[in-house]
Length: 130
Image (cartoon, rainbow, N blue to C red; front, side, top):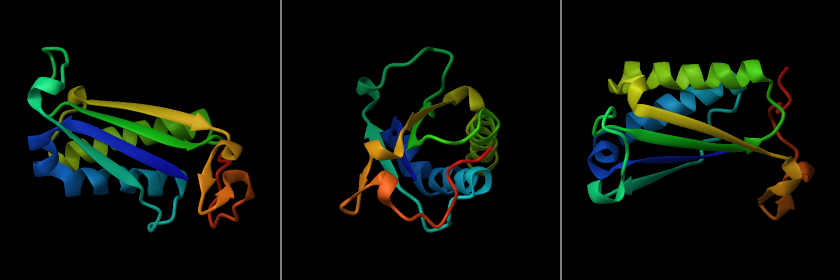
């Protein structure tokens, strides 16, 4: 399970929403073996004056936060981050310099999904990846 928040300026989200969505989801499917239909994303479009960042970033500066069940190895998490950078650069033309990614892991018991606790769900994919 993963929930993704994508923060960027309004213009960047308007221009790249579909390709950003695809680039991020493809990485999760490839690196974490998530099913294709498990795509949970929220785009947060910010006004220029509400998004302050260093001068060495462009107007396409984007922050990606991924909340997920704990259980993936460091190798898998690093592979995911690298793959997201690569996919976004290839599919959107946005430089990795303009992308920041944070992974937030929590125990499955800290999630409530479809009326159940996360550790009570029967999943059709593995979470514990070594």
